[in-house]
Image 1 (cartoon, rainbow over the protein chains, first blue to last red):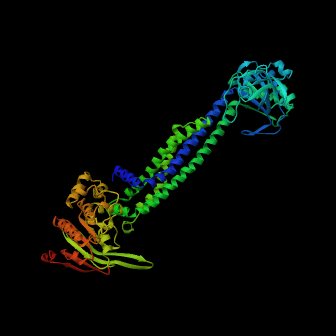
Image 2: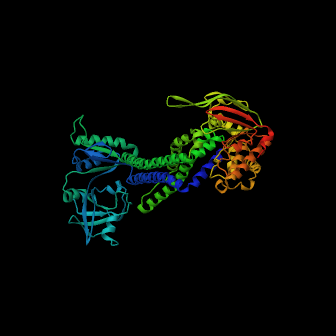
Image 3: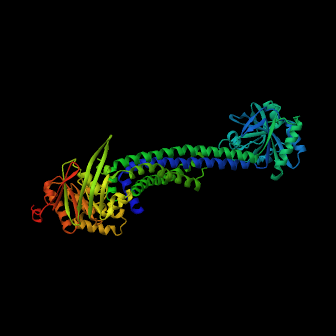
Length: 402
Length: 230
């Protein structure tokens, strides 16, 4: 029997049980669609994360208090880094363009009758340069304003929009946790990340934040900008040595701070997003598996129902392999068509998600190939047992089957 | 054409071996029309399955067109069924979803024989159903279905045609028509074996094998004049 005839027979048999075939394929359709959409969402999230992180600059080294135990997990004391450490770094470390200490906390902002709860970031005068923020209007605070802890602030675009609307905020007085701050500048919008909007924040001098607002004598991070990327490792070593000396940490003892560069951060975020993608894809793969079991179930029913047909075919000379192929082709056709529709629906879902959620999704060729290959493999895998059962039937018993 | 010697078939029933067929021996020559008679349980179905290469004997030997069937593997048996044997069943055993033409064509497809469509149409023509080629079995009468089955049986030019109660599900008038079809084929040179318990069928065959309790009890040849008595 030629493969073409087998295909024709398989299609006819599927066609004559339309509803059943569609329902069986539905399991695969849902499985493939969820694999495609989940992976595309995960991949999109990863790419978006990486590009936005890259926006903050890749030549940044960050010093943070405590010790880095593992990815993203920070432990130990949080008050070990002081403002003076930042000044010392700026003064003593070569081949850097600047260092900026940071403290940050959410606070209540009020202007007129409008409120918002936004991040207040206390920084040095070099922060815009280090974090790729660009002034739209007005000015950033000066070194002198930092040293004298003045109550001035520079606003992110979202804050301007929420509190001032179309009004020009420069020169207005904003209440931060009840205290008056004069607006001296506003920033160009950076664009929101999915979990964090960098424009929903205001910047104030770090000293003001420490003394007047948060009441803390430590800093939460020191950002250091390397003059060029090749020197990052050397700068890291120098910074470590300097801060250890300043903190009087004896030889052999662990640091009470850690130094990280933004590319490391980028990598660990990328890894986290990859894990997320695998997780989503894995859950979706389970539904594909369930779809495969559905195929197997229906094929077993079909083989039993068609016992007599199998008997007839064997009596007139069908070989084992030809019966096996006939049923295998049926299950593969179901999973193949299911896979094709599933890919279409999956791409549709991911597009709807990116439109509605404003979340980029990426449907890569590899994803499609993976889902397609996987669904056909499932057709073969779950179709084999029923097909083999059919192929091994005894023709006499099969012919007598009522 | 058929040489059967000491052919036996046993089944295990618990610890006991039950003989379904006990050392049956006979020969059938090319061009014969033979009926096999016997009450149910006499072993005629078992003999039919063995002759049709659907089953292998437990003992003895069976040669079909000089092929030693006993030595064949499952796939070779399938090929012998495809090339050497044409089956006609009591309940027609046509594929319900396929048209008459496709049913007749099927053995040619399994045999990978070219021009299957034309040959299948020729075969339908022989049983007078060319104009019914596109009909499905459920659109055909019982007699027509059986003639489609006959067309399917002869399409490969088999060495023998095995018919198991071919008139059993038909009214007597249609039964006579079907029987005439077989006689016609036989007159054209086909070797035909009919299994039946209907004496009016076996009466029209020149030779009848009587089965009883798994043994061949009588091998009766009628003079030619008696055969056409109907």
